Length: 274
Image (cartoon, rainbow, N blue to C red):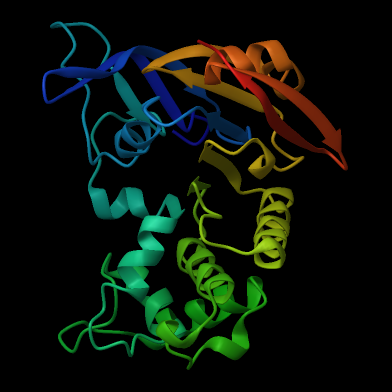
């Protein structure tokens, strides 16, 4: 399984509340290929992330057919084992840590250690080892945040807390890092810092899978873009082709102009399609 793709979808369909949220999605993302999943609200991006993390399953395949989804070559995983292969950073995870802990005393080191238990903090009944704390400190150092180890997340800036969540995602040394709309809530400087950290991680060899509706979150190291529209793949190919103005505009139902600078692409809406 060492060379198995990060993700294989074969005619994957997801129905929620009677509506088809994803429609016969066929897609392979090789391990090692940095990829962006881009699309407007309602395209099915959140459901795609839940498929990848096995929180959601597609409709079952016909008997004797290949399964509709494989992650790292397998269609069945122990969820805890999978979490050691996939690191996740999202604005929603940030909200659960910062706003979902009523006592407000979860420190950075505890947030990172909690990845070993798949919890949102460290609790008295959990056996935290010295090796876990050492790995957590190493992960914080990797993202330039060792000085935050004893600081409660609730007192940090949004950018600092998001950096801690990158460390949490990396503490298992995963094969892939999944970023789900990761810069939501970050100001201009914190956003730049976050993306530069992600670029370093990509260059160090961890596969990046970015799920977003913002073109300018797509770091230069990503060269493949999959455009989603209404639960289907509208385009899958090289970034330069996917972000061509007419193709991007068709995916977002708007007339757009696209600029490029320093390896990043920037899109602006010129008019909406009626």
